[in-house]
Length: 340
Image (cartoon, rainbow, N blue to C red):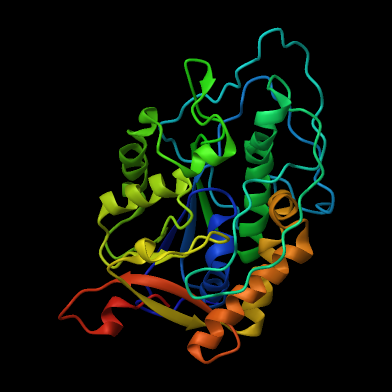
């Protein structure tokens, strides 16, 4: 379907593969159905750690397309400053063991936000074999950030929606190193204070995004609910852009707190059943993350439906998405909230 005349282009900043689709996939489906130009920019999805083989397929992920031939996969990754993500080897470590398909869980967080949206019960995945060249106990969680697997799932999900995609290729917090050591020594640390060596990241990301945001582009960015360092850095980068009318989305599945939307006003956009189903089909393409966080596709589907129904109840419709905009006194609400 062709876009209506005068329709502005949308650029969605996604800290990781899955964040944009899980958090506002209903709106992505809404725009795609109307032919609205939209590009998802994934920030932290590379490069490859040295000496770490690609994981085997995740159970239940059969049939997910690879990197080649996915409709809507978009152009090749854009050039951006990046760091090597070489995994430090423990003393005496040698050899490489193949990775199993099942990934370890990331820190479990409630799916309900400040609005009281119900979350889905979480299941813990069985303990996986050790990651090569790392201590199996503290570092097994890093496997969930494997770049090649995550990029492949990202392209499949965005191809499902039919939206354009760009990759900035910055290194995930789980894999960033300094002096041969991981900057974030455990999973909880990525939700704590930012490592000093990450202080330049907001500026570098902002400069990589700037050419992608010509005048008139509507920028969508994460609120950084949950305080994951990569989300916090991505929000800081977009704030540096200072793009007029920036729209902020709620990071799923992290809990939303008042400080996350201080000075912002909420708006709900109704979603049709077809848009919701298209969103769910795309969201389930992130099979590794669904397994790690929700015990599989059914758990993820329940959590996403609970979220869209809760926002729908707020808007007086079966399904809706909620987003946040800056309060700008003196301007009509319609001018501030033109996100369709």
